[in-house]
Image (cartoon, rainbow, N blue to C red):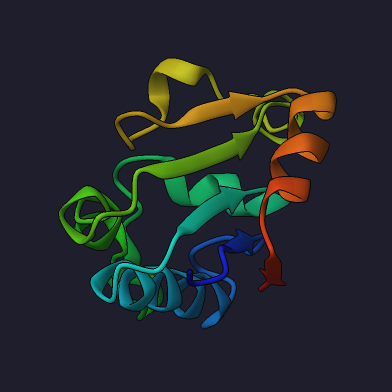
Length: 120
């Protein structure tokens, strides 16, 4: 059986290539039926907001890729509830369907469930 992989995305969508690279890894893993999850923490939760206006920052808009996660078999998507609240984001504003907001104890348990963890 393939080892499970959790990608933790901590960068805002406009802060460089990290957010896009995390999403690319997740989509590739999903395409190959790897047991994979995606966790948004810290400024990475900004990726979950609509209307990023990426073109103004000469960045690629990640919204379409985020919406494609389920098409690639990536159903395990999480966000750190503390990071969301700390940045003044309401749960209703988040764009991924099926996204699970995790409190601190759930966060630790979720990370522990995966065989390998990569943070970007």
